Length: 179
Image (cartoon, rainbow, N blue to C red; front, side, top):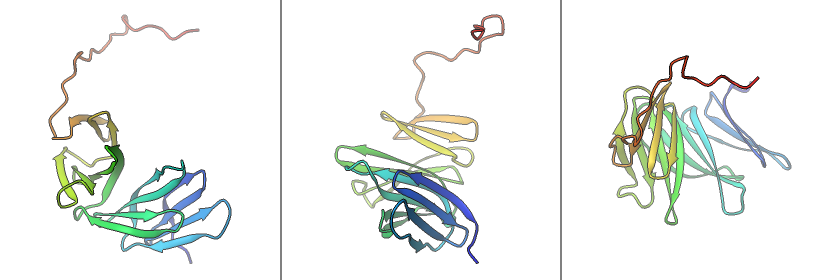
């Protein structure tokens, strides 16, 4: 009996489903399904688009703190990086100067970068208070969400200071929505 699907990614080429058992299945629009069994259940997934504008890599963060890089559509394991001992809760990628950096957030608030251009392959960046639920790379900044709270940081972990302060509008200052 198959286990429950806990994560999924939909691409133009097909559907990728991760199961509680560690099984990850790619079901293409045409052709046979391919699968791989990882040592722990997936907690986050991100498909990367290659030079031919097709998903060619799949990042899978797992419950055991590992980041797996799979080749699509073959579902071959290219590499595994052990980031910690808590679940990987968020993934992002950034292409810079012909290199690819993978950014991972962990459930304990740590944010790390993985890449071939990183000494040792993995580098801790900073820690936030609470589980990382979302990471976005915007220019040279990292936007890290912990639930509803957002942290905007430079790659070295320093807080980004806003050039214009945020101001809460009162109800009398707010513009009404059109008709």
